[in-house]
Image (tube, rainbow, N blue to C red; front, side, top):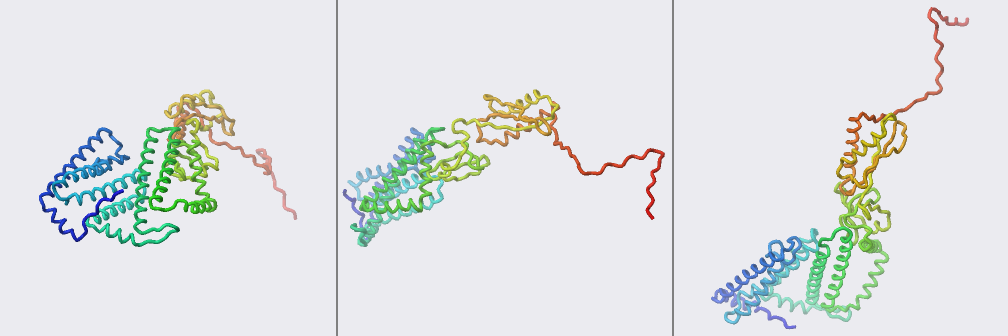
Length: 445
């Protein structure tokens, strides 16, 4: 592999600046402007033809020019224009434009891939700024000729690691290579995830999510191994590290490893899918997302619970929509003993059927469930197919309608009644007949 020639050293900076005032610089600027216009036109045409999703498009971005395709295509056109103009005029503008475009491509690739792969992460903005600063500083160092000098000095700082000799320059190049490989791996995994999760609903969503997570983990592992090999690190030395990691997992990280394994089991067995209504202990909600380590359950009140996957495997979990999304609900009401039983059943069923969320097949059923202490107890049972929309509001609406219908038809809801038996009180004295006078006994003397 041949390396491109480094720019002129700093001593020739004055001569290079004087080249900007030559007529040939205008030709370079005109060629650069033509490349910009041509790249913009091509990107706009491709964006209209493919109509990508602006939220997840790495190539086009939101406006076409903020994606990866525009600076990459501009860089290719700039290299072609440079090869043509160098035949007639000395290079001046291209010496600035080419490194700047290389830095712009590196920034756009890193930023757009990270935005798509880790959407909404708190650490995303600082990392993006760091990547931008390093890319522009490297471009400025290459333009001014400082970068080759600094790299040559860093190459002299070395140390031995086993049988491998490493330098600061090698370490920096290895880190950059590892970052580039990981970015490419994240890019490929994001494209695979977007293709797998496109139009995925119901049972296939969780399985495709599992395949997407497995593909991302595999690509990142392969990318990391390739990056270490590019640095020159002997991968056989990692066997000792792998044994130490295994011991650490066996002792200190067993809970973390159990959560990851449980997450893989949940996704592959599909015992719990995204969108299922579940109940864990006293918390009930919809499975919003299944990660490798935890599962997010969102209740109807808006609260979100982050549950470790191990709990979902080792504890009892009620899945209200595993095989059938229909859920049965009931409400109990009491009426007086002298009420018309047939009328009460008809009114109860009517109150349930007036709610659009109550299913007609199977339909609601009102049954005389018990002879209570205060009256007859009826149980109204009905089925719904959308428990994720809440259950308390529907039960309240049905109870209010039952109360209105009972009042309209004169059905009495009895008050609680209690009979008290008082024991141990003395009998009342006999009544004195009218006209008679009872004398009290005279006191003893």
